[in-house]
Image (cartoon, rainbow, N blue to C red; front, side, top):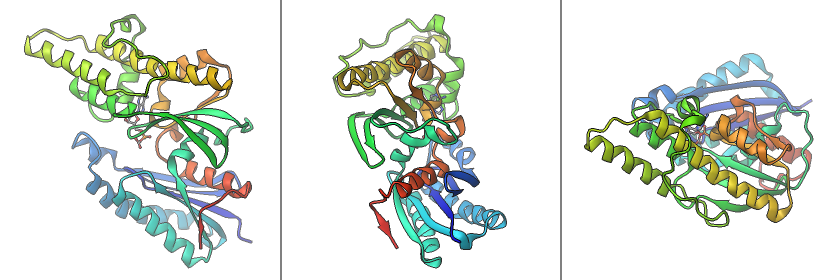
Length: 318
Ligand code: KG4
């Protein structure tokens, strides 16, 4: 009997495959090309594609030792958004798999998978509607989630994504990519009150480039004047402000729609201060396990399974 679901994710620098039996994980593996990308201070798309090509083969061999591939019932794969070259490798691989075993190929938007990633391995029931904040290196979006496939964008960044700003500010201070986890660790509440920008109104568009430029200018002008800079002061005040920018928006939409259930997802949702501040808004907040905050195939498989189970897979290709 065919009873296995497979998820494939290659949208950025992580090559990842997961196999589930219903919503239970039976296999998951991710190989990251982070160490290689660190040499260049960020993700180099061409290098990411080459690494996917190599790593997907390694994961396939390993997976074949753990599962009976003939039991595959459906293939879920990230098709958007992401680096085109990286996506192609996963899509090509997943389509061949689906064709070979004559099963369905389902295209997944990996940002939607981030929305539901908090429910992986969780006992909490999914209750609609809820608000979701997806914050990563490439995206910062606030969603109103009405159903598995009824997802509305309420607000999204008009310029930089939050993770990108963490990385750029961190790099200006001499830290290694990705700088989000480093800034998270170095944060000190006592240094958080120094302000770089005045807060915009909550209903305004989400924008982070003003804050980024103000900090980079502060760092550069102090360096030019040979003034010592206090990294922890910069990091802490930067982090407080950027998290506040997110939290005031969340609060605004909670009140506007009278919704108190919140889900966080994406790489930046690992951030301790973000989790703390959002938990002050409501008791009904759910976060992904740390290993599911970044891009991973488990969330692709899990979201695909939720769509499949609720008969809401709209984009099926055989
Ligand atoms: O979702 P993700 O793994 O990849 C994509 O962007 O697609 O997110 C990576 C981003 C990086 O910018 C990284 O600096 C940031 O998430 N990040 C964090 C933390 N962990 C990762 N930012 C703030 N605090 C963290 N703990």
